[in-house]
Length: 147
Length: 398
Image (tube, rainbow over all chains, first blue to last red; front, side, top):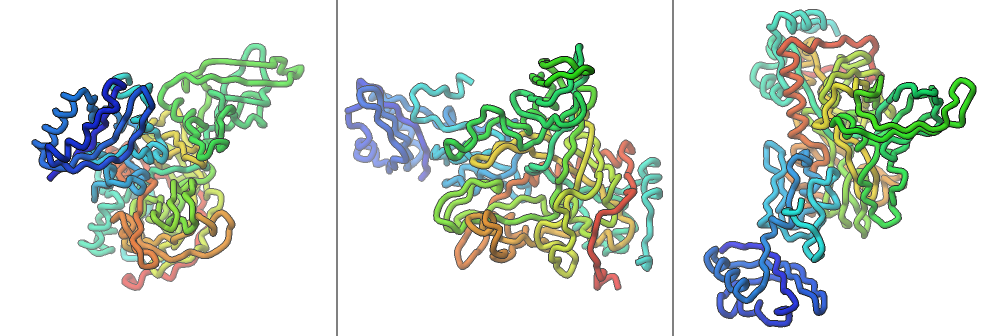
């Protein structure tokens, strides 16, 4: 059993099509909607946690893509600018999922994007702007490839 | 005093630095050395212990002389990248405070404000080699007729640029919690309601003043690592208070001693001077400081082997007590506990996180150790000591 967080973008041509429930029915994947936003007649975005075996998660993602859902790995949307991080640890106490954690005894800060739920708290709390502000739900936001 | 088995002087240690025979350990390494050898042998063997800290230190800033313009100006308002520097001194001198916000910053009008650029960031930009925009305004005099002077300048264009910090390196500090019912945004970070998380901010066993708790070797003239370059302790910092409650081994149980430091900005690095933005609070500067502590006797060996288990931080409520200036510490917690990431408080688990970078503090202590070993960095003997407190001595040395 493993878990993966992905951002799903439902463009207007498919946004009213029911696909998520089939992840459970056809693939027996456990899904957990972490956040969702629907821009009527434009697009819908869902931050989804998938739980199941690695292979089945991959199959489920393939199924979503076949149904024209844009699946974006979170790592393109949320990242740490390594040279800005001073390894202070201020973010670690507020991260709800331990995606940001402290490696002991070195006391350096680790970031595991697979655990991130894009709550955005680290972007607010980091004094050095090392954690980018989360813009998962803004269709006009630039992502890593534009930076 | 005077009954120590080991007695060394600054001069003797400096000779060893020059002839390459000096033994230098970081404060972290010294813990094990004293445990293994005992304080007397450790003092015989080890000459210098290096400390380090890298945290947000708001009481910091840069004294800048921006050079005379033609025609001359006696500036009474100065802005650098839109951040105001105090200009109420001679013609082209100014002081840029780390916590000064940009002129057009929205501050906390939309709460919590983000404070993305301020004095600390200007200082970081300067040591990064970036050009900054200087604007000086004046009322005009017979000797200084110019009313306005603007220039793009790099750090090298300033005839003088010093880092001059009135209060750095606090000897111990609060562990901040929030007992109120709403999330608060403080200089101690973001604190969730109902004591959900706790923040602390020292490099504990690596911290300069915690390794010389009675300021026996640190004083005016102590040569230090400052922001990646060389600086000096120029006296006690503001709010220096040696009379804070101490545990039996002399360790202060709250914010106590502080240092005032100065150094040439031109030799510093953005790696150890970082502008900081604290949501809801303001701008600041992360300052890297490393202080070498000479092991003059076995008592200094004892002091420098202080470990996270021995150092307690007072737990303070920033929801009500701190802002109102009321209340008392809610309890004490060791840094060994805080560094695990969790502590018990009133029967519940509280997440703990650091605000000062321990890993960078260790890096600073190691850099300073290597400087001393290489013979390039001699110890500065204090010309004056800092106000201190009485100490009965260690039981085990009697």
